[in-house]
Image 1: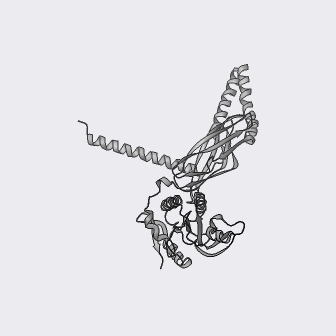
Image 2: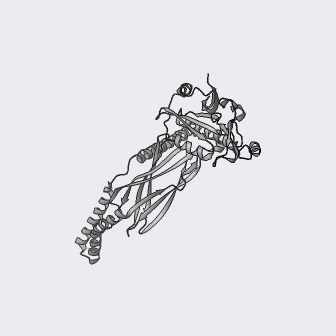
Image 3: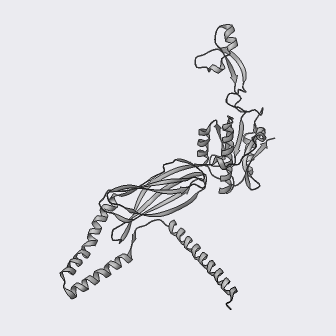
Length: 382
């Protein structure tokens, strides 16, 4: 009887061997993509051409046939014609990089548009494009090499699907391309300056849901919310109306008594707002979770018409950056600024800076990592 145990071990080893080959192949491909495109002379193609030329010369020398003489003339003339046409192809070939959507949500799938341009009458089947992809916030770089045909006298577009898996600013660039002649003897490098940027905002639907009633401690001073339609400021004086004053400030009862418009001067209490501190601390994945949660929390307050003071520590400026968030546009603009900051490693220094730089805050909400996941923690300052 056949040894079933040995057969099973053979299949297992064979499967491991195939997986090992696949991993080595993928690693080799990644290393190849890291290398920049460069001018390359294809020796194999040139050798094959010279070999064919030698065969035709030998046949013509032996047979002295008019047809072979015609073939020999064509084969000798082809490289000259190839050089001339390649000169026009190289000068006329170009590429443009277009990002149709300048702002997308995380985990969405978008498209990059490559516009291939060729004003010459010559085509090529191997137009290589080096596309670099960089998330500038996380300093994460990747890329790909695309080999596309370039049609004669044609401008056409190719759409490339892209999945935005992380928050931040995705910078797409094409530093160079290579143009290959019709006979395939040489691939000549050509520099380009195509750049496109896409801002990726957190996916609000996947942000964690929190009980906002527990965040009432995050209000400073009198622990009140400043909402649209609610006025928590104090009246300091009553004076005559001046053109430009808001109608909502008019003291209607007193105006009726005095038969002249009177307005209420108010002392603003703008510090009575929800203060949220976003920690840009941890690994790339942790900071990504923090930003996603922070975006969801602030969006919730915007829907409830609650204004927010959004803070984060800037390593480059060595100071807190503070933004007034009153609507979704303010939130998007703030996150666009956050994407230009640097990620730091010490989570405790942010709280220390808050105590020393902003001692007037009695409490605030800190969006940070806790127990391995992003969370909103109310911090009370002594």
